[in-house]
Length: 305
Ligand code: CP
Ligand code: NVA
Image 1 (tube, rainbow, N blue to C red):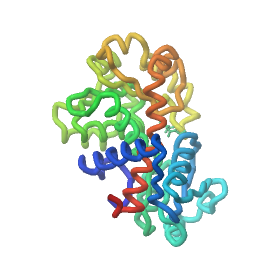
Image 2 (cartoon, rainbow, N blue to C red):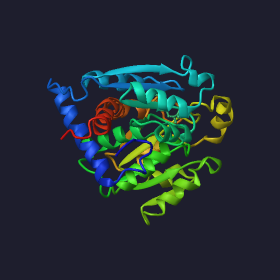
Image 3 (spheres, protein in one colour):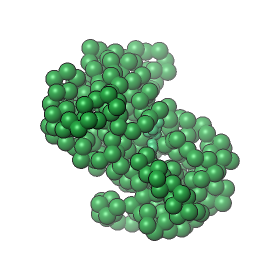
Image 4 (cartoon, helix red, strand yellow):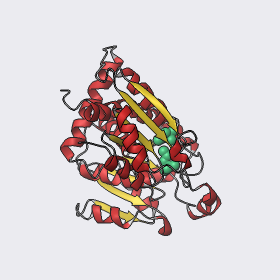
């Protein structure tokens, strides 16, 4: 594994390897066992979109691993004034040991990896959010003890979260059901991917059909970063696509709820369901730290055992 650009690129074994290391690092962290595996290394963090969790968890994670993290905002970098990504990649590769990037186009992340010579981590694009779903998978295993045979459901926009959930959950042996309004279904590329898992993937326009017998239900905002101008149209289009008491009532009684956050209460999820599942949701947020530390170790200290 040279980069983390999408979850598609990872084998099931590589996914489990990251999750196992994440569990180990979490255990060590909770028990005050230091692990300065990346001592002397520097991660650059390019942000072209806002962030709370990603920025803080990567920065703290790098610190806990004995290294340093640099916050590089689009507002300050020359990339924000049009310097090509090819040049940025080659320059940053001369200073840093790894780059984390949050941006719009997936191609920008791929180009950074292609033209640079250091590991690149995708910290969200319009296409996918692999770091988030690694944390989600880690949380599911903590609560459910494994993956095989579980049913994961996503209710909402066929967006970056939906895409990574489909890929990550199918790879680990979960069934996946997605409920989105017609115009907001997942892209053809992801539908093609899901065809490799016959009988494991379902798409519907009915949240109750999707939620039936679920072990974990995910949702996400109606309007993602960059789609703010569509907020009103989306609020209309997504009516009925909400994780609420009725949706939870058709799922398994011990069904978990996951939300990548930030959440818009009473839009994609009711306050009642959110608060009833707050422990799972904030464990999920915490696990960003541990999962990303595992990714950074795998990429920036590949010989670490
Ligand atoms: N879930 C997530 O990526 O949160 P931030 O946008 O706050 O980083
Ligand atoms: N789909 C959301 C996820 C935020 C973590 C967005 O892209 O804004």
